[in-house]
Image (cartoon, rainbow, N blue to C red; front, side):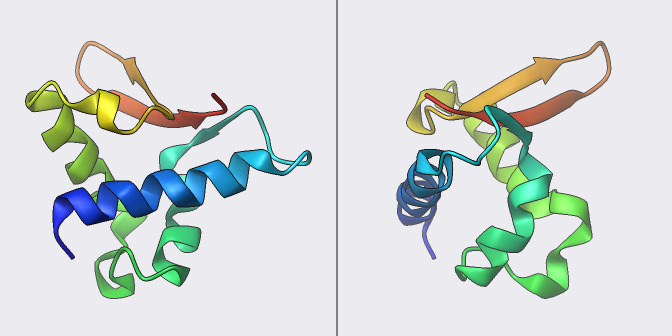
Length: 88
């Protein structure tokens, strides 16, 4: 699946996820990997604790295109970045 389609699908899934009254206000991105795998966005074989998702988010960050997923919230540390999705 090409990146723009994947981003569009991620946004659709997150919109539905955060629309539920029982959903948290903020969740670690890797916690939603099983949902993304279930929806066919990522390969279960390459699950590795959300590596594919983190790589996508890092790539968008390098290109200054994180705005394409309005739900994403990076928490930058000195060495690494923790990725979260939040309700918008």
